[in-house]
Structure formats: C-alpha cells, structure tokens
Length: 274
Ligand code: AMP
Ligand code: FE
Ligand code: FE
Ligand code: ZN
Image (cartoon, rainbow, N blue to C red; front, side, top):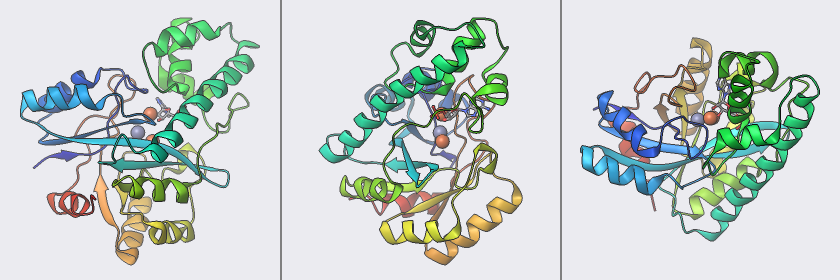
C-alpha cells in the first residue's frame, strides 16, 4: 500500500487542479492520497470524484495555518466536517488575512522589483487561498526570477525584509477546532528548520494534551536528526507517525510518494475520526 497524506492543488498553491492531482497520484502508483490545500476544502468534491473514477482512495484534508506565539505552524486536518461552523470561520479569517498580507508584501517588493497586485491576482486565478507562491509566480512571469524556488531563496523566505506575517489561530485552538469538527490533527513538517523557527518539545507535549493525533515525521524538509527527534517525541506522547510528499505539482521539487505513511499509521488515524 502506497499512502501519501499531504498534497496541494491550485485551490491553494499547487499547480494542478484537484482532479489533476488525483491523476498524478494514480500515475505515481499511490493507493491512498489526501488533498490538503492550505486553509480550504474547495478541492474536495472534484478530487473525490476523480479519485473514485481512478479507483484511488481519497482522504479529505486541510493544511490549517496556525501559530504558537510568533512561530508559524501548519496543522494537517484529516476528515474534518466541512460544514463545521467554527472551523469554517477560522479558515475564512485566515484566507481573508492572507490577501491583505500578500498585498503588503507586494507593496514592499514593488519598491525594488516592478510588480503590481494584478500580477499576483492573475497567478492565483481561482485559488481560494492566496500565498507567497503566487507572488513568486508573478515575479517569475515579470522575468525577475526563473523559478518559484529562486524567488523564495532570494526574497520570499521567512527572514526576508519583504516578509509579512498574517493572522492565524493559536495552534492549540486549531487542534481543538479540528477535533470538534470530527477531524484528526497531524502536525505538518514540525522539524523543518530551514523554513524558520520550529517549536520546542514542550509545545509538542502541550499539543498532545490538546488533542494532537500525529506528527509528520518523514518529510523532505527533515534531516536525519529531525526525524529521529520527532520519532522519539511521537513514541513518548503516543502520537502516530506519518510520512508524506507535500506535493505542489510543478511548483516544488517534491514528488508524490517520495515519503509514505504505513497502513498501520493510516488505520490509527482513521480510527480517531469522529
Ligand atoms: P505562505 O503560506 O503564503 O506563507 O507560503 C508558504 C508556502 O510557500 C508553502 O506552503 C510552500 O508551498 C511554499 N514554499 C516555501 N518555500 C518554497 C520554496 N523554496 N520553493 C517553492 N515553494 C516554497
Ligand atoms: Fe504550500
Ligand atoms: Fe506546510
Ligand atoms: Zn503543504
């Protein structure tokens, strides 16, 4: 069984439609795939229909933006009820905040690189959730850089003077909201220190207390040391260990199935669905 529980479509910052992501997943030989767009459930219906057609098991997910004090955190949520009002409200607030934040970043960037908000709007297109990758695409289209990755390395990373934060819920509140919506929360790439600060062990402990179900241990952004630390924390707090690709279509190098989740881990998550 090949199980990949973290992918993005053009509902957020992936490059393929939800149906295309499912076709890519089938072509990569996956048996189970989750669509986990940032802060939106808009891709679920289309993905579920295409997955059914392909004989692929579809898992509806969200990558919920959150924070612990000033540290940005991504919390995966599997099987939450999409009509849960409290969770929907959290996601709507974040999506709205992301627009103002992207506009602020564009204002700062435009001082040095000719760029207009309309360029970003053209790149994000129908996306429900706007993110830095859309700004990157606009700068690539303008000819300032060659790839998304180059733009991130040069000016979009978290320590860049052009970087602006956006509102996001406290991660403990996010975990409780996901559980209240019947979902199963798994901390995405908790040890990806190249992206910015990572949370200390004590925060994993308090999240376990708040209802965290698992840790995404096997992820491209984790070195051996991070994986060992996270596996230790998972064992200590009784958390499920997952592995996933974080596929973004052609927007990132991540390949579907490059990290996988075991059947046992998947079943342990599914058993927590309410
Ligand atoms: P945001 O959610 O707007 O803060 O942007 C973060 C997103 O940017 C992540 O979810 C990734 O999809 C993307 N990202 C981060 N670093 C890179 C990179 N080096 N190359 C391409 N995409 C990246
Ligand atoms: Fe992303
Ligand atoms: Fe993420
Ligand atoms: Zn992701």
